[in-house]
Image (cartoon, rainbow, N blue to C red):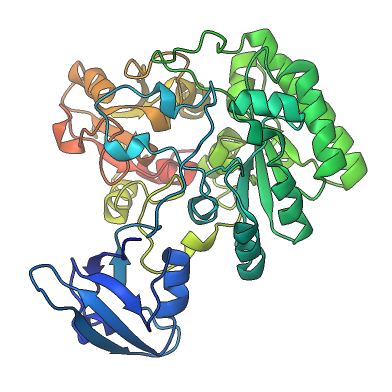
Length: 460
């Protein structure tokens, strides 16, 4: 088990006063070696912390003592969220997007985890096939929720076949344990045409009602297929299939509302786009609990763009929302530096005598943004095709730098170009390109309606 490695120390913090430096490894805190940032946080909450530290370039370990107020931040950022080995996924799902990544990307993108701790910290979905009794005891004792569970099918034979793992037939028993223990759990069903749609999807909804009615929400999302997929049985949805999924979800929302008093299940925005249907009204998303899963994102964006800034509350964030030192990774993490986003949001609007504004977005984003930006003087859309992944990948968050660069290369120099931060992580695109490598300067804007409205100068 590796030790947490310090990546930054806040000036004048208790850690700084004690002599900690970036690069130090925290071997023990009050005699204990934490397995992950969850345990780490509990240890650094103490008023007095005795540290055993390994420092690069020194043979001997250091002993440092920290004195602070109880609950006062230690002032340290650590390199990773998990200090022992990340629990990798032993499923072999045909629809797994990690199996569809091209070669040559950042090494971390190829890590396929099935770790309940990363579900708790960052909202990653877990199948529970590697979940154990000890894991259940810890989750229940420490109240580690919300958790996010990939269901896909409640029929054990179908689920095992989809995961290509016999444990998939039985691992949902842990979902029952979590719900019995009062843990908030959000589910996901990735629908693959001809595999778990149609009658199987109805069976899954019935299984949720019968076996897991305490589930907080269930999101129904389509599989994503890149041009690197080698699975002959996997294909994109047709428009008719997408419409059928929307109708199935609407029918089961009525059943859940009648039986449980809440809708529980929601379909991804992508389905309505594929089916050519209008999005459901904003109030039917019940506070947008699966907003980060691409469900209700369009309506929430529209509401915020038009001024209803509290429209998308979303599911309450897990431990990562407040844990000190947790690294910014995972899809709930900050995409771009706050200073960059704030600077972009405060940029003067386009108007008479001002530069024209072009808003970069993916294929699906263009369909959502088009009606909102229509009629705004000096503002246009710049849709970017995702040739890097190809297939049916149209979400803006998966745009690669090479595609953005290609789209910008033929554009005029005198425009402002707004880029949503969903494309970036640690200031880099998925393919490793940085903003400085683009042929035109861009302004990074948080991917929400309010931020875009501010960047455009309050246009409505």
